[in-house]
Length: 329
Image 1 (cartoon, rainbow, N blue to C red):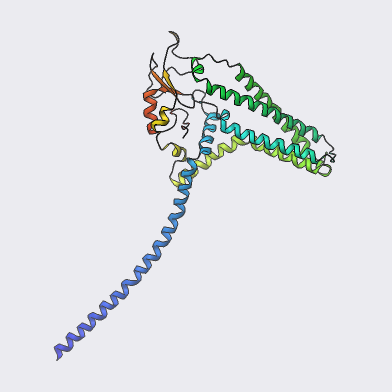
Image 2 (image 1 turned 180 degrees about the vertical axis):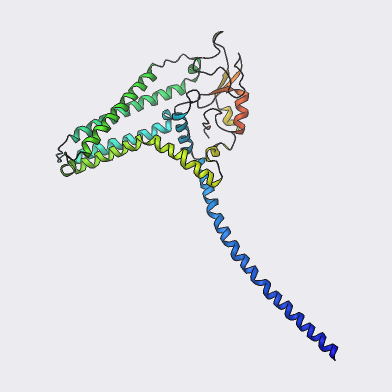
């Protein structure tokens, strides 16, 4: 009997121990589920910002800003084509000029009864004339761009006359100088307390302040571009662990995109010079001098390379080896 009782008591003890162990093991499972949930929630914002950074780095406007910054701050030997002469930039200029001309004309029409102390109408009229001249200059630049794209072979031979382009550049410089002087005069007249134009001509005063603010934003564009590409983008790249400057060039170009680029056989002009004065006499990829009948390919940025060298490069990274301008998709 004693042996039976001892066996029963031991069985009871074993049952209680197993049940207690089962009870003790269940709470850690619930704790583990509660611990993993915040970790998943913390990973979601990081992945969202990373996808956002990848989309921004591959956007066309980001690629264009990088190209503008490189053109303004890069060395003169590898600048490539002027991004301000592209069709996208000209279209944005046309929209901005059209909006300014419309707003100025409408404001002058509804403010005929206002009598400002200082010649605010004279300043607005001068600004309006400057916008009209800018519109005419923009048309000339667009015609010149269309002519350059239509005569590629003539441009390669060096027979194109540059007088029209020089005239356009001089007119553009003169017009920019006029707007800079007019901007200073407008600031003096608007913010001088002796004139007090807001009480006598509130509509014209608001128009002048708006035009001055727009010009101030345009003049500060290089500084804002520097802050964005040299401060904000590197900071975001270091925090996310993703290089946004190389995000748009992580995929090679297809054969159709490569074969659509212009190519020709190189030909020496004379014995002393192997290329025109504006061209590089050697391929910047293989560092070999161009020879007669070498196949040369030109990228959209006007940089030239050996056809075999640049084709292998573009199949890996779809951008120019010098100026990093991406190929049009």
